[in-house]
Each structure stands twice: as C-alpha cells, then as structure tokens.
Image 1 (spheres, rainbow, N blue to C red):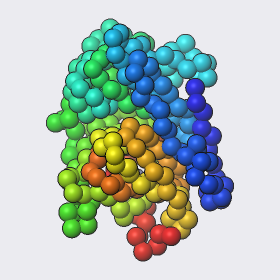
Image 2 (spheres, rainbow, N blue to C red):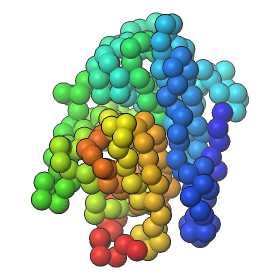
Image 3 (spheres, rainbow, N blue to C red):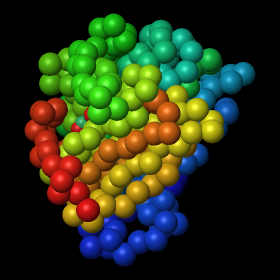
Length: 271
Ligand SMILES: O=C(O)C(=O)C[C@H](O)C(=O)CO
Ligand SMILES: [Zn+2]
C-alpha cells in the first residue's frame, strides 16, 4: 500500500512540483478490477478507490493495518461516483445511486463492491460501532453556497455529519459546481482539529483543477485531473479553481465534527 507521511509547513515550503505531488496528490486510485488504498499518517486516514468490472470486488485488508479485517478498528465512508450499483456488508445489500453514500460501522466484516459502480473510499480509526447506513443523494443535507458573480456558485451535500448519519470521526459529503462556476472553497479556510481529503470528479478530460494548498501566507498549487485526490493537513488551505465546472467529494477526520468549526482565511491575506 502506498504510504504518505505527515509533513511540517516549513518542509512543504521548500518542495518543488514533484515532491509536492508525491506527498499530497493521489493519482491512481481508480483502476479497473482493483481496490487501491493510500494510507496517510495525517490522522491515519485511508483513501481508496474501487472499480469492479466483471466480478464483484471484496475490499481487502491492507497488511500494514495488522488486523484481521479492514474495519476491526475503523469506520468507512463510501461514495459512488459511477452508475447505480450495489455494495454488500456482511451479506446485506445496499443500492447506491450515483453520488449515494454508505457509512459502514466499526466491526463490520466483508464489504463487497459491484459493477457498474466507481467507489470512493475514506476510512478513519473508530472507537465504537455506529450502524451501517445508506444515504441517498436526496436525503443529504443541502447547502447552497457562493454566487455566480464570483464564479463559485455550488451545492454542497452533507451525508455523514453531526446532524446526519452518525460516525466516530468521519464527516463526508460532496460539492458540485454550477455550470460557469469554477471556484470551490474561496475564501479558503483551515481547521486545526481535522484533516481533509478532496476527490475531484466530473473533471472533463481536457480540463484541470488548480488546487491551492499550504499555509495561507505561503501557498502552493497542484494541477489535478479527473478522479485524483488531495490530502490536506489541518494547517493547509484546500481550495481550487477549475478550467471548467466539476464536483468533489470532501471527507474529514480528526478531533471534532463541527462542520462550521473552520478558520476563514481572507482572500486579501493569501500569498
Ligand atoms: O464547496 C465548499 O466550500 C466545500 O465543499 C468545502 C468543504 O466541504 C470543506 O472544506 C469543509 O471543511
Ligand atoms: Zn475544509
């Protein structure tokens, strides 16, 4: 399994393009017929992608976890970025529409992914078991954000969160940009109490997202293509502008789950 270690802000400030990409950008999660994970030492999260084709895929247990099953001491959020498809957990089957979400609680056993889904996986350590729960897109909490005049009109869907599906650490959902809007999360923010990962999807093949990261006074950028993820330490902004509209799954883990517990970073202070 690919492992990413945590980095200090002053180290990040010295990095060139290749090192920044190798530390924070996850490029090859979605491969036909495979489940792939990256293990981040930032809050010990796993980000993964599963693309079943001819056969259903059982999510494997990476040997680095030293447990008999993936969820022995973890919880898992799954969002289907492909076509409607089934996921089964210990033999119980759930149908995930496009952008539907399944929370899988600690202690669950075998998790199987079926075609034609494309499944984004985000897992964090868990101290107790909450029920495995399906959330259809229409059942998430919707927030309308931004303005067409500032090119950041977007709809945010909260699935696993304080007032929705219960979890130990995971807070998860997705945001879709409206046509003609390109900016996400600007003004940018940080949240000292949680890391966050973004998975960009619905990025057209000939488009890219310029993702901004780093301390607000020392920003760096990563050029991101479709179905690539970014790992964002708690001290780093995480904001992007696309060359076209796109969507992204956001997922957080850490010490609190208050979505609005973020420190906004004024645009005029960014460097
Ligand atoms: O569009 C946005 O703004 C977001 O989706 C923001 C993320 O959800 C986030 O960064 C939460 O902390
Ligand atoms: Zn955030």
